[in-house]
Length: 106
Image (cartoon, rainbow, N blue to C red; front, side, top):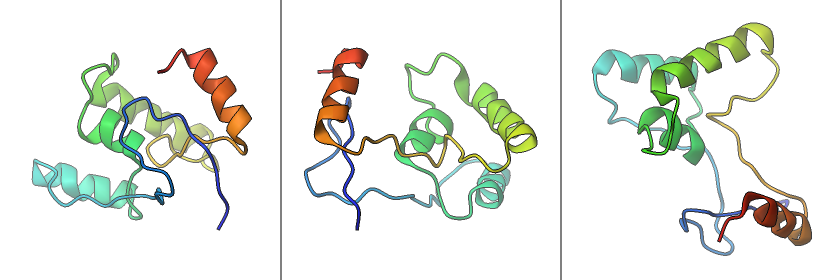
């Protein structure tokens, strides 16, 4: 298994933790649950949960705009990974530290 490094602004990760996609079965209303299951049968990343499924408070665009962006991606760039399934990581610790500095993250 390949090791990558990431910046954890929210403090939700632990060293050695395996990060993957997560399926959710508690989305309401039911038609949205079905739609999410069709769009992302493998599940979504923590980013997808925060910015689409749970609509994080600091998300200035909201879930409707996020879904619009997803449809544009599917129409124009179907081979590119969805931001709802993306993992943002670096190949080395120095790269992750440089990104943290640019991001001004704690």
